[in-house]
Image (cartoon, rainbow, N blue to C red; front, side):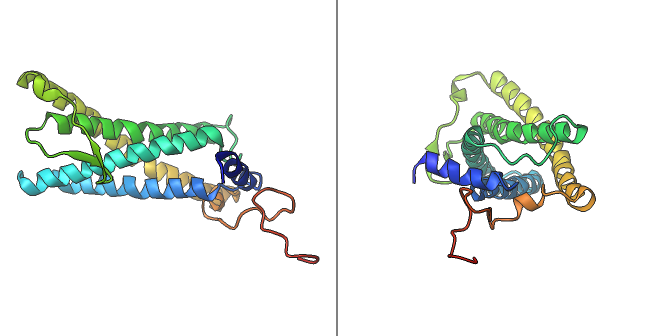
Length: 215
């Protein structure tokens, strides 16, 4: 199955107001990784300095790089096929939804990059990789002065801190909006992220195959 066929298959879901299984998988896998990263990063901040903390931050950085790769793939997917039109983009709620979504995309890249900068200023030679499989180089900060490395560490740490906290506030706002759509507006926004049955409209790409007359 080529990309064009995959896009046509996914558009069949959109025409019924649903996200495709590919979009839903991206959403929930990345959501789980982001929540894990927030909790794990919080846990690591309370560990005493030492080997366990150092290795923990290596794992934390590698998961972050994995999120960045998944974010790139998700951005490519969204550039090929948008989601179903479940919100009014000109309304306040629609603008807020788009703003939060843009922030998440920003975080998918800004958090791993700031973490990469911090890791590259640390002494030691522990390598990084993407998902523990694909080697990922450190930035060549060992050629810089200690003072400049320290300044880069502080800038990256400050950026990382604020991006994390804004993301922490954005997550319940995003989830709360989804439940508001379900409980108050009673539309398909939340259902579209949970219903994977697909379009059931005859002749629509992505519909269940016909089983004959009377099906």
